[in-house]
Amino acid sequence: MMRVLLVSMVCLILAACVQAPSRNTQVVDDRPGLAFEVNSVAAEYYELRIDGVSYGYVREYLAGENLLKIIDGTHQVELLSDGTVVFQKEVYLGAGTNRILKVGNYD
Image (cartoon, rainbow, N blue to C red; front, side, top):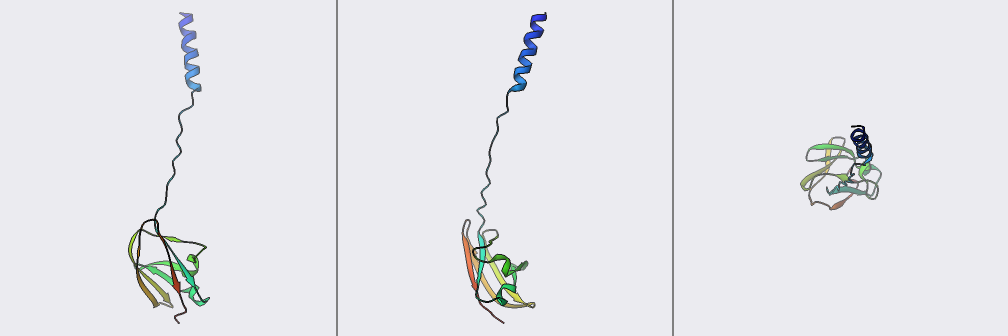
């Protein structure tokens, strides 16, 4: 009886020392990105609206610095200066692609 108890305890201790398998999962973000190339400081302060939703100022998404990741498809891009639309363009962005729009001073 003592031998069975001892063997059971040894098996239990060994089972507790077994490391559970681990898994490494990576998530790939293949949403398209949109950035802007500006030729004036004033253009950096245009408000960016995509499909009617404001995303802040153009300066937040300058080419080479930061991309705005959005879902793939056709989008209406608008730039506003003091609430007035100064630039409007329909763009198609496919999955995994990045697009840079050149923006001038439209004031």
